[in-house]
Every structure is written in structure tokens, then in C-alpha cells.
Length: 226
Image (cartoon, rainbow, N blue to C red; front, side, top):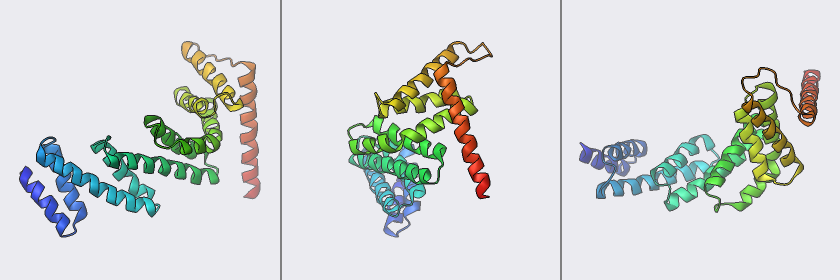
């Protein structure tokens, strides 16, 4: 059966049935993860994934591109194709974040920027220029989204990782100081989780009030436009 999958996979490629060929070879790798034939199949899949991923990437079809980039990384994270896929994936998240930021969706922008940062931290030698771009673009949405998580949703663990990301991107800055103050509060809250009453320090209380005022002002502005 494995040889049938192997032969039919390459046959589908010859008759330009790309997806069916990929499906057969993926099934082959599941059944036979090691060996000479498996090595050939993995190399072929990497090539096909990259061809499809690159096409979607340059068409800016990020939704279709992402699954193939992730398949490349899973299949062989040390391959040259995986290195290219990581670059594409970082740029994909960055572009998506920037697009969402232009329409004021700080939560979705922050999530995409965080994914870009996660990939950079996994392979920090890939693109220092993108790290610099994130330092310019991602800090504000990180803080705003983290404050939303902290103040409104009370999701302290999720808020912590976005505040921490700010300290990675702009260490020594005013934003980093603010993020560290929130991180201290989260650590304090976690250490007194059994206490239902939470008292914030004056600095954080002022920031929370400023957050509410800004949010109310934005809402009033939206209502006035309607």
C-alpha cells in the first residue's frame, strides 16, 4: 500500500493533480517516516510546499500561504526551505498586524505582531530589521491590548506575555517601565489569588483610569459619527 501511495503521488504530479499528489505523499510519510523512499518524498513535499507557499505569498494571499509555510517548518525545521518559510511567516504576521492597525483593531494587530515576534525569538538570526520594525509598530498595540486583557477581561496571564513583549522590544523606555509595573501587579495578584479584593498601586490605578477615559472618548467619537 505504501508503494501504491508513493507511485500514485508522483503520477498525480505528472498529470498536474498537485493536491492529490501531495495528499498521497503525505499519507506515505505518515506510514513510513524513515528510509530512502521517505527521504525522497520529504524532499519532494518541501519543494511542492515551497512552490505553493511562495506563489500565495507574492499574491498576498496570506490565508492560503500560512498552512504551507507551517507544513514546511514541521516537515524539516532545519532545511533551507524552512528558513525561507520562517522569513515569509514573520513578514506575513507583520503585514497582517500593520493592516489591522490601520483600522484601529489593536487586539488583532497585537496578536499578529506577537506571532511575528515569537518567530523572531525562535530564530533571532533571521531578520533584525523586522525586529526594529516591530519595535516601532507593535509597542502601542501590545500595551493597549494588554491593558484591555488586564483591566477589562482580567486575563492576567495573557496580558503578562504582551507586557513582557514590550520589555523585549524597547528595553529602558517609558513603555517598558509601564509594562514592568503591570507585570509587577500581575505577579502580586497571582501570589494573592485567594484574596477576592485587589488593590492596585497608585501608578497602575492612574493608568487604569486613563485607559477607561480614553476608551470612553473613543466610544463617544464613534457614536457621534453614527
